[in-house]
Length: 125
Ligand SMILES: [Zn+2]
Image 1 (spheres, rainbow, N blue to C red):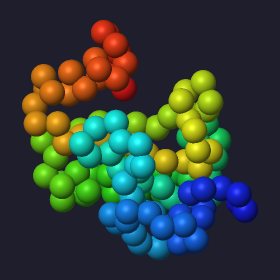
Image 2 (cartoon, helix red, strand yellow; image 1 turned 60 degrees about the vertical axis):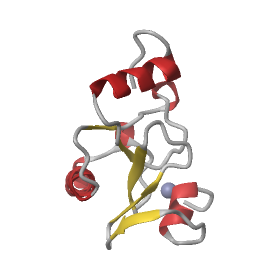
Image 3 (cartoon, rainbow, N blue to C red; image 1 turned 135 degrees about the vertical axis):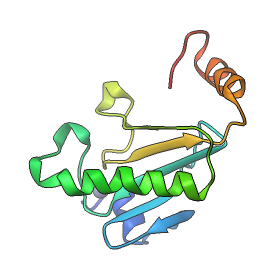
Image 4 (tube, rainbow, N blue to C red; image 1 turned 90 degrees about the horizontal axis):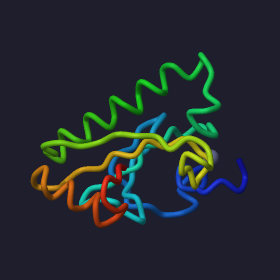
């Protein structure tokens, strides 16, 4: 996709804080972090979002999760969250599939406080 930000990052036309890369996936820091650690894991292939995946994407979907798990281990995250925002109403801002890996808070109270500050009482990320 010509005007896709993440395709440009995948092709290194735009620099990113690269954390991991292989033939199929890339991981880099989110420029607007929700947490002390906030990493995006993307397929290099342009896929609009989880809402448009097909059976043929099964392997790459598994790879995104496996990559997130490896990065979390490497970063020694004690607990973390992994999620996809799907569609505009689901909070998706860039229409190239990306997995969010967030963590790095020192304990559960710090995580709860972070969510409360960002989203208000009862908020969830
Ligand atoms: Zn793209």
